[in-house]
Length: 494
Ligand SMILES: Cc1cc2nc3c(=O)[nH]c(=O)nc-3n(C[C@H](O)[C@H](O)[C@H](O)COP(=O)(O)OP(=O)(O)OC[C@H]3O[C@@H](n4cnc5c(N)ncnc54)[C@H](O)[C@@H]3O)c2cc1C
Image (cartoon, rainbow, N blue to C red; front, side, top):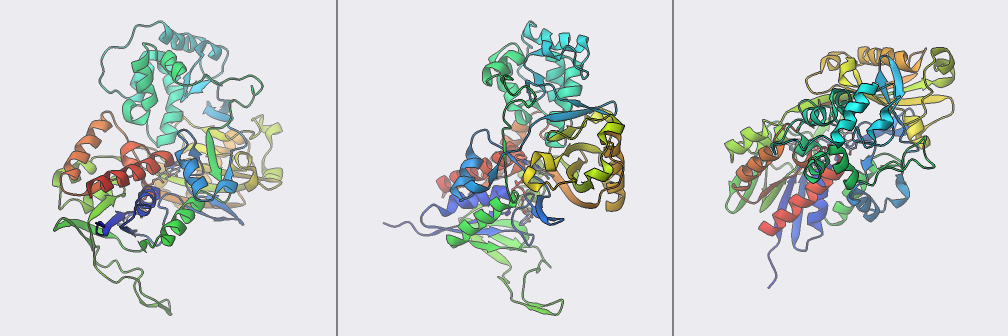
């Protein structure tokens, strides 16, 4: 006997929601509706024209570890668009100069700590202290701790604040002091279980990078991007979903999810009529779906946690308050183009030429910029002769002062900082500021327990699954994985 058609609503058209929908549509007898509040799909994956070429406004690459995103891109027919960064040589801001990041680091942890001897970034005493990790007894206690605390205990304060903080803090727009090890850097947790020494544990987990033959460059970059920007992935997912007859509702902000029979009724936020018919700016717009409710047998909630908290507040006050407890950091991404022949003068500034992927700025340097990509050298297909294209990130957890500036003031402030370390004499010839409000969930100590409590509370209300950056990781691979996982679990429940 044929099973009746089941209808699933995916709330949120970011990469997590689209991945869930992609998985769902391949199941026979499944009707899928994707509900997105804004007038575009992709959420925090966004690519747009900057001075005549497609440049990402947020994510510009994904980690290839696990292979899932690369596999998805290939499945979506994007093989020819996959592109590897030309370099992974990174620099670090210290004392108003850029220093080359030492080779052989695993998320900031030196796998050969004595190779730090002679580095301008870590004192000889700091390098020896890091090496002590190899002989120190196992740190007792199985409780989750902050990343900074673990690394400080094992390798000392210098490695923690100079090498680990900018990498882990930079990836998460957070502070290693507040981010929990288990959820933020599970590899550190596994390594610590595997060996009494963090370094040895990491060494046995990863093949130690070989520097032979690539000494200046380090191992091949573990990242891939897309030639015309990460949004290509969103467009490809959208096409596949439409081919499968998915109902995609843009401009439909879910206000609340309530139980209806064995399923769900979703209601739309009052006054949210952005895509309905009528005259707008003198143009007759054909209306889409002017309904105020959507019925579904099951739902995947792929929204930022603070938004999921609102939508699910009526069915699970406990789940909602736990969701609302996940903190978020806001950031801005500045894209700036410089005339390198006019404004970049490495010989007079004595600063290193921008050879490499860019630089990170430790929180202790008290700068607005947290990281800067030398986009034209990282992605040569985006470069033009005589031009230096950069993308600079601003804002981290509990440090949003620079984000209060107007766009113009922010560009000037960031330019002044780039001037210090890159010897840029002239202001940028073109610039763009993209603001990402409450964009990076912060995984504190015991985040895993918090997520388990949320999942229990929300899961008890009916056929609903959560997906998104707030639960298992902010990177695109984790988001894709969370979407696939949520879809599979929901299918098992329906
Ligand atoms: C500046 C920046 C740089 C980044 N760089 C990288 C990188 O290089 N590599 C990497 O792997 N990751 C990067 N990330 C992280 C990664 O891009 C994000 O974690 C990921 O895209 C989040 O996807 P998501 O689907 O979980 O959430 P979102 O993209 O936030 O999607 C949620 C969607 O839900 C919609 N929505 C919200 N409320 C409602 C509602 N009530 N009803 C209906 N729809 C609603 C939103 O409009 C949005 O489209 C970066 C992020 C930022 C901000």
